[in-house]
Amino acid sequence: MARHVFLTGPPGVGKTTLIQKASEVLKSSGVPVDGFYTEEVRQGGRRIGFDVVTLSGMRGVLSRIGSEPPPGKRECRVGQYVVDLTSFEHLALPVLKDAGSSSGPGQRVCVIDEIGKMELFSQPFIQAVRQTLSAPGTVVLGTIPIPKGKPLALVEEIRRRNDVQLFSVSLKTLDIKYKTCVRRPEGWKEEGMPARKLSQGTTQHTTENPLSYQQPGEAA
Image (cartoon, rainbow, N blue to C red; front, side, top):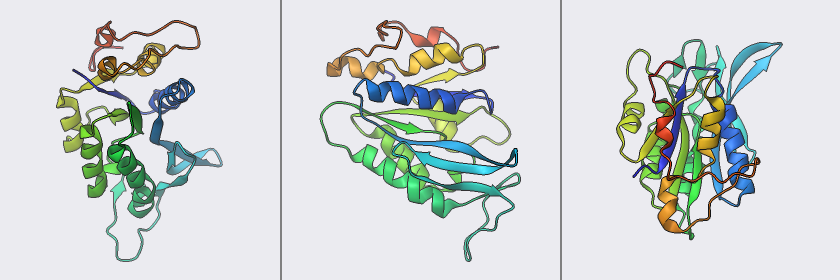
């Protein structure tokens, strides 16, 4: 039975916005939610890099254009962006560790946005993601990039997991994916967690298979 929900789609389609809105709805419904998302940084109307932002409000550098790595550190570059692994790991790793080690009653959601080329320079991050996916009581709501160029090992691993539901996001399907993200993950059904209601007042049950909407790779 699928427990985790991942979104995939081209850059700029709205995956992070969807994740943020879904997190807000889950929190307001009483579901414990933690994690992080990636946000672009602009200066004078020009994108100069990306920050990692935790759901508790902490922010740090993920990458910047043309920046230099710290002394003694190898350069991790994606195109024109240089990744600051130290900054990224300082924020992301504690969040994943807390999510994976939670022993409280009921389920909790861990947001991981995203698992992409920049983040995957970090081996500790890769290990932490695997541990979080395997942690009992933790549901991951995450994003992964669409396949392009050399396959990313962890991304392909996530695509193949039996406990992951993967949805392809496009501008046409954005509202559908939003409603899917704020439904109870199917793994909560047996835990007795009450169904959550959307702002429209309708209860979204998991007896309907959300994968019937659109599978990754289908034309939007």
